[in-house]
Amino acid sequence: MDTYLETQRLALRRFTADDADLLIELDSDPAVMRYLTGGHPTPPETVRERHLPNILAGYEKWGGDLGVFAAHEKDGGAFVGWFILRPEPEGPPDEVELGYRLRQAAWGKGYATEGSRALLGKAFTELGVRRVWAETMSVNHGSRNIMAKLHMTLADTIPTPPDMERAEGSEHGGVRYEITKEQWEQRALIQRLGPAHCPRPSHAPPAFRPPSQPACPAASR
Ligand SMILES: CC(C)(COP(=O)(O)OP(=O)(O)OC[C@H]1O[C@@H](n2cnc3c(N)ncnc32)[C@H](O)[C@@H]1OP(=O)(O)O)[C@@H](O)C(=O)NCCC(=O)NCCS
Image 1 (tube, rainbow, N blue to C red):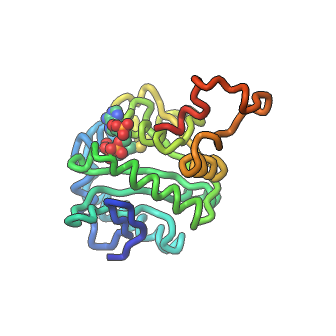
Image 2 (cartoon, rainbow, N blue to C red):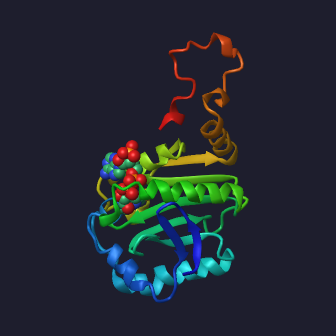
């Protein structure tokens, strides 16, 4: 396997021209497509003629470092779904989108958080990325929970993209979350060394922070 990244339980690899059936099967589950198309499957010919060729072209464009990556369980090899880590087609290469779409059988095991966390680490430590952003429908609480667990912060609300108007809750629009390299490094430090390394308001010296008040509440999730 052409491994791109490993986590404790997942192996991420680049897709190949033989993977259309995996993508077609993933997009054929109405539950998976609920907040994307309102449950409608992606037509197989769209996967074969547009989506998969675009994914493969992305590896050429970004030297295999960025793009869409298939995720498999390390134990047994089952296909779990995919993760995205890539810039906008015409956007700056150091600002990348994070995304995920997993098979229903893989939900609720922490896989999306685990894969995304590892991708953030790779983006900021190996790939020269400066900012990672992620977008989802406002009502997609599963997806928003992952962004919050990654310590991404809500940066903006966004209009529903025209191709997602059939999605459930599309009338509520979408949300954009972001994390910068500096924020990620700060979180990594807190994780390693404890909450004493939380950013503090300059007017509040450490000695005067009430002990009962968590110094850095988001870091505990
Ligand atoms: C959204 C999705 C990726 C979540 O994957 P997952 O592997 O189940 O996510 P995790 O297990 O890492 O869960 C992350 C957190 O979100 C919570 N969560 C997951 N699904 C949830 C839901 N439907 N509602 C509320 N919270 C949810 C989990 O409980 C977990 O929080 P916790 O660890 O504090 O309990 C998966 O459901 C999916 O692929 N959905 C279809 C495609 C999609 O909507 N992609 C996102 C579009 S932007």
